[in-house]
Amino acid sequence: MTSSVPGTPRPLLPLERSKIIAMGLGLALILALWFHSELGREMRLWGAGRAASAGELTKSEATLETLLEEYPELGRARTLIATVSAELLAPELPMEFSVRHNHRLGHCNGTLTLGDSGIQYVSRKHGTWAWDFDQIQSMHSSNEWRITLSTREDEMLGLVGSKRYVFELQSGPVEHQTWKRYERMFDAKRAARSPE
Picture 1 (cartoon, rainbow, N blue to C red):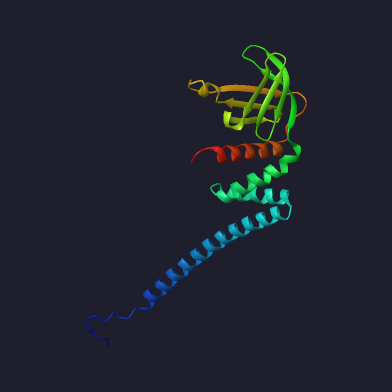
Picture 2 (cartoon, rainbow, N blue to C red; picture 1 turned 30 degrees about the vertical axis):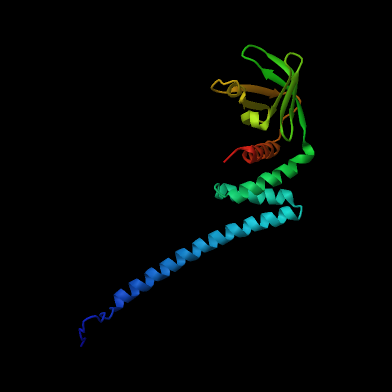
């Protein structure tokens, strides 16, 4: 017999009690999985930083690439991988390639140099063209034999748009990993110079 005293909660029935316990356990499991995921991510990021500090740059870079595939918004990993990639790339810079510069009609041959602060193209036909990273709007490599630059030259002249240059590598391809490192260095240096 239950008394119904005002303000006193009624006792829970066994089924209600088990539902509440199940909900609590479910919530605890969700929180544990979230914490494990966050902790795992942070531990891998910490490990990549330790590897970089110990000079294990390739190991650090591989860990960071995996992390960024899973968590592309992870800014600390993006910052660290740019630093690691720049250190791995430094001994290879500047990189020079014999290239063919494609025109709307025809082409010319010259030397394309990828440096630590910009890109330069030298040919008999055009002389020397040099672009600091600030002057390059975008760059990409659709394959290991082709590099395309879009520069801000028209923007500097007060015109809308950019100028596009296509270079076909003749002396040999740029390796995929090397290009990724160069792009990361480019992105990091541009981000460091651009106003927020």
